[in-house]
Length: 263
Image (cartoon, rainbow, N blue to C red; front, side, top):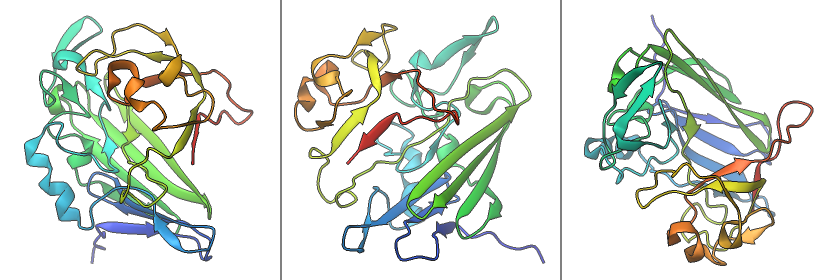
């Protein structure tokens, strides 16, 4: 008999100091990350719903009111201006689901698909999804994989891989909302953040990058630790931090580098 895959998987090391990460196959969604505090008590660190049905219930709206809690956003995370792009001399029109624009893969993006389980262990989970040619207006068939793992009891690693049979835009990410204090019971204005960047991309009133690359200054400068609430309404456009930062090119010996810290 074929083995039925579960709808949720919890990753954890066999130690009391381990974080616990729960992943749903629906949307390859991180629904929970629990970490021990200084007293050893586990506390929630991300926003999410208690039941999977709550994630699915948001999708018929197919607009920006969907919170995208913890999901895999794709094919293209963030916005495609005017829901259109050109590639190799050909124009493509994709689903407009954020006013005139295309957001996080469109009406039925990767976050609204049931991913298949490739492999599951106590500390790692690999999920796969096939996106057929023409889905949401994109060219090419894409086979995507995501592996969530806990390399150590206190670290979460997310690895993305994809192949396609035709040129196509692809920009995958995880869309978790983090609140290290209490998982969302209170705000994050007291969280301190540092980003390894000296430049950012300004956006217009509809959150579309203007094409300018601007030097960080004032509220937009997070190159040194800063509490989010210090001058959040003095940010570019005055709507808080919802911008792309241009990271410094300083990879480490293993190709990885610290790009941001928060506490």
